[in-house]
Length: 239
Image (cartoon, rainbow, N blue to C red):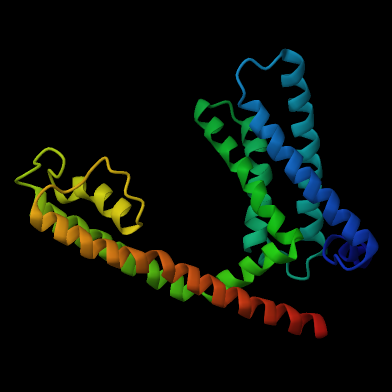
């Protein structure tokens, strides 16, 4: 029986496995739509009641799926603390917290329901490649964020040096200058904060040039890792 359940829950190459996968995918999408509808103002009592019943139905299915995956897993603890295990738990956790504790702060946990979106990664090959790619390029991404953080700080300190005297309220400190550094390095440029001195404008020019590289580096890393992820999937399929 355990092997039969495992073939349905974990193997999407079988007919029953595909049906199970599609069913969960559709339910995830419907639950996210339901979550969004809940946020609409002036929902009628009938709609509110229907959404409550539907949420209970979703929780029953997702909870059963979570328990089954633990039971059929060859290494239950590895699944529980894995990426997918944590996401599966976050998908159902808000309901149980709300049901057992009556604190207003617990309502904040409802936002974890949006993590059901990430459950879709398990059931879609293309999305699954992103998970594989993230593992491949993890160290490079961490290094990228560290370097980006350094660049943001240096940019904030630089623009503060040039603009503090000319705009003491806007660039009052390095911390106040961080917003400008972020929107400039990411090449968003909202225009709500901008330099007015010659030195500040020249400095901004160089920051913008660096920002172009900051935006393109992760795109290149992801593209390379996705290509590698496809090769890994092909090798697994052959095996």
